[in-house]
Amino acid sequence: MVKFGKQLDTPLGIFGGTFDPIHNGHIFPILEAAKITNINKIALTPCYIPSHKNAATASSQQRLIMAQEVSKDYPIFYPEPLDINRKKPTFSIDTLRELRVKHPNTPLCFFIGSDSLFSIFKWHEWEALFELCHFIVCFRSGNVVDKLVSSHENEVMLKNLLMQRQVEDPMNLHQKLAGHIYIANTSPLNISSSAIRTLLSNNQSIENLVPASVNQYLQQYKLYQQGSKL
View 1 (cartoon, rainbow, N blue to C red):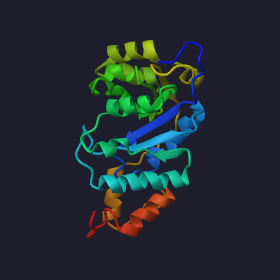
View 2: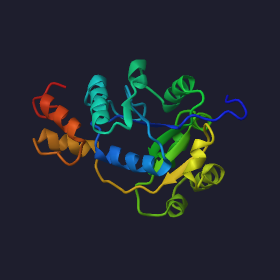
View 3: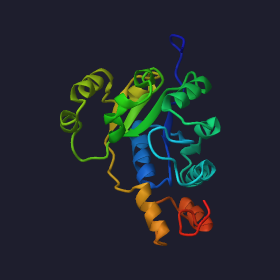
View 4: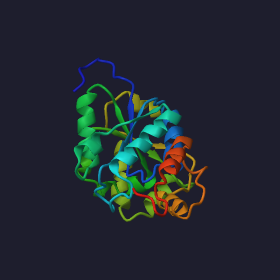
């Protein structure tokens, strides 16, 4: 717990995922949201085995290397291997608890997409997440939040959550360790990892879909291509 009157450190951003592979649809909205919220350091955290979907195609080490490559192109990121080092199915709360121990005086800002906001009630120990971090939502749709919330199956719960947690000023994220939701107005980018894997398996170009260093790594080791040894 931060002592009364003690100034907090600069917030640390956190962005996790399977990253199979990581692509511009992941990176660009986070960069845009980071600029809006004045966050200048982001832990890029590939999960070991996703708890909510099928296992990744590329290995944990290959996906961590991709995070390292992204960090070369965009120094705001750094590769965080906590999930991979755990070597078991991972939950976001486990990572956040470890990061909180490492950074006791730092606001933790977890970047998510609107789809993750709408499914937050299914997250493991979801209520405890707000004791550990803020959420920055990269809104991937041109529709307003209220309209989407009103059409969602958890409409009442989402409205109550946003009423309690949402802040309009991103600087609020800098003034408290955890507990807020900030909706960042980011540009949508319709790219998927599965589509990239399909393109690579057909030996098609992905040059404008992934960071340059990631593309070079994928081409060098022929990841996801027919006949490759992942």
